[in-house]
Image 1 (spheres, rainbow, N blue to C red):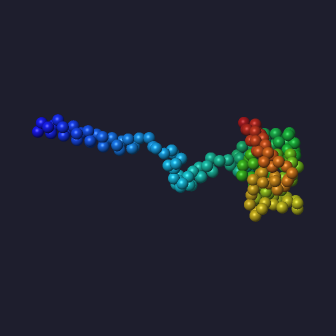
Image 2: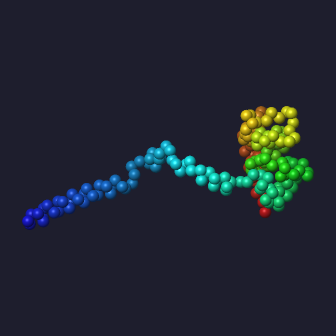
Image 3: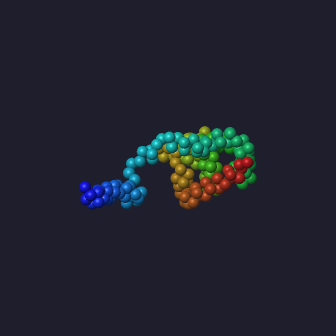
Length: 182
């Protein structure tokens, strides 16, 4: 009985603790990186609630944003008139009526002015909506779908640096809007 207490009990205890420690070691730091262990399909990536939140928090259509903030419309109109981008007495709400964002509208106005492109043609290409007053020289967007500002510039003015012009116009449009905000 004495041998049981001195030899067998400590041996069983040692085996118990050594095998009990193996699962604990396996639960430690992972051996693979996070990129390797990610599944190719992640349901959280396709969660439509995230898309709705993004759309809600995103910018309003240009005409709604101008209608909601009359002071912004007045300041921005005055600013664009002073710079010579739009003629005196232009209704900015009407010019930006079918644009998805105010920055996109102001960028289109800037591109139209700087590259001497007809605004209605550019507006039709960018928004996909045919303006009331559009010239015969405008072909309109391909397949009737809206295209980006860069693609529109490439279509209407082949010799221009479309990527640079679009990027510059969007940046200056954002700056104009921020300057006009109270």
